[in-house]
Image 1 (tube, rainbow, N blue to C red):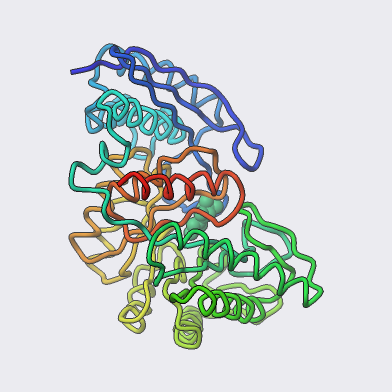
Image 2: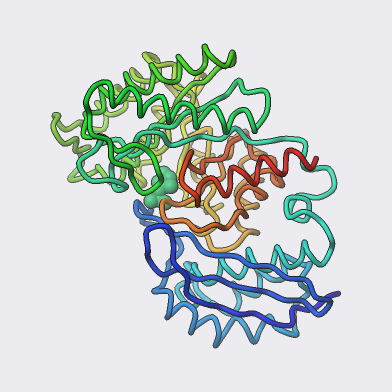
Length: 399
Ligand SMILES: C=C(OP(=O)(O)O)C(=O)O
Ligand SMILES: [Mg+2]
């Protein structure tokens, strides 16, 4: 037993320039860990609640810090996360803020790993973890809530499914990103970048499909392994009055949206489609999964919000064959691991994910390896994204 002896909370900047919560945890034998909360823009309706950073810090200092310091074993992640839930006392972390909760949970996990002298992925996953690496899904073109005047679809994701190593996969995604920059330049399209470092060109979705298809095919031919692509449609953000609203195109009914996604999956042989339908429409998700789930991953992000009860509902209804895992959607690492494990027991493929507002924190790289998640979605370029990708490269070298 090695008690937590100190917790410090502070406001720091995230990648959008907004205030977020950073936590530092120290243990009685000198173990140390630092963690920082990310923040979403296209947040799910059912996510745990992020409070303004200052308020989240004040509340956590009043309630969580006294319950953890001198009381809880720094190497017992379950006890730490259970304590966070107990002191919060709500279902959505609105007591201390999911941003304070996840920052403390991640910092404590790193302090526990430091105390034990283990890499974080091994502290989280155990001795027999570290031999499976996630395929990085790299955002290369995007719009939606992450960029103005760009595609309707929030993210076009390079998916190097045939890469022989995570390092080669990470570099492949960077090459696809660079190739798309060249293609846009050749077409004379001015290309800004969105919140996650993906190109945010003022083009329609159809043109984006063509460009991403061309770039992934060319880079795949060059590197000699398969690079597919996928989407995050973030369709809850498009859903208004029973229809999916596409700027510059006709709206789609739910049946039309299912047909459209199924057609695109086949036309482009896509590996992955996240949130193709509204976050409360488990039935429409199930219809689409029934149609194309044998040849692509239909992933629930806003649908599940990393919550095991919503995931169980999706499992019972056959809503998807994949789940996105965002620790700050649910508030603690233990809850995130529970969702990955419930998924794995039921054949649901996990993709551990960043948020559009990020920090240099690298916990999700360790979580993906420690929990043997088959995918990680954490951008392609930009420092707060490459922080996680470069950490994966270092972990691969260690094991
Ligand atoms: C990463 C995403 O964006 P955000 O963090 O804005 O929810 C997403 O929707 O998967
Ligand atoms: Mg999403």
